[in-house]
Image 1: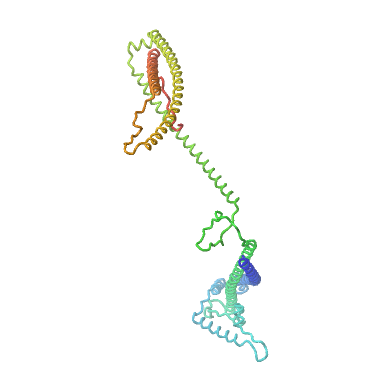
Image 2: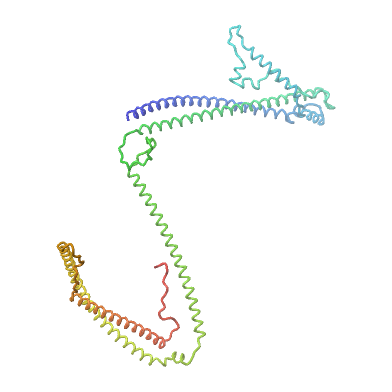
Length: 494
């Protein structure tokens, strides 16, 4: 346990060091984010300013290139309208592109001059600190982008010569047109250079934005790691290793062959387990209740189907009986029976049979009571006989034991040369009282059996008389339906 406690202390020290390093990295990342935001905001302001200047150049270029501006320049001239239109066409003619090979060579020459000038800008022999343009360009890639010499900005070559002058146009007007065209070309060149600068500035602005996003992502990652590490330290602060003494059945971790690893084991309160079991039981009861409802609903559906089928069969039976009644052949006996001619005779017979049935029922009840009384007496006598038989059996066992002992003594006393006799060599005498009692019980049983047979015969005669009475009643009161028709029960209600 001491070793475990020492490891916990070492882990706490290591966690504190990691937290301090994470806080230091987070502070550096926050400074980087602030610096990136400052550079991005400053350059965004420069981009907005450059966009405003570019908008001014575009408006100026549109104004210089417009036909209205051109015609105002020749408003006081003596040229005809056709001549002014011809000059306007020359003014609007697109400039032919320069030779690609020539432009590439000029770019290489300009780049060489730039490198030579960049390497010789510093003046170390006069005590002035050196200034390397390449190093400054690495720090600021847009150091002199779009800045050209003044003489190059003012000189714009044109492909229109004096030989292209239209007829009826003097030299002064043609030169004025060339000046206006040169001004238009310079405006177009400035617009193109401004667009290139804006394009490069947009790329650099995107680069700064990506740097800001990367710095913010790094800052967020460090904040998340620091927060997770603090949460881990908070958990470890209260996650202390202590010793537990548990019973064998309470440990549910699979036991290893040598040493069991309890690093990922947790201690659960008994109330938690019981509450979870109660919740599972409640869910099971709800499920059983739902299934019971489903069962009852299906049972009701089966009952409805069965009743529907039963009603359909009853309808079919009634239709068949109606057909039988319609097809019944009426005879004289049937007519007299329907008119009620034999009602008196049948009534007398039925009264006679009813009186006979009542007499037989009374006689049967009397016989049954007498038999019950006789049965109770016989049962009491049988009980007495059983008790007597038990006593005699006990006495018999005692006598047999005495006989066995005496035979044993006799065998011991008898000479060795005489043959021994089994069972004493005598005849077992019968008990005359027991034999008489057995014969009496047998006679009682035979008489009781005869009485039961007579009662059964009388009951069968009564049932036959009941059937005959029902038949006579049917003849007296005719009906086309069955008398004792039992409605079939629902098979699901058994």
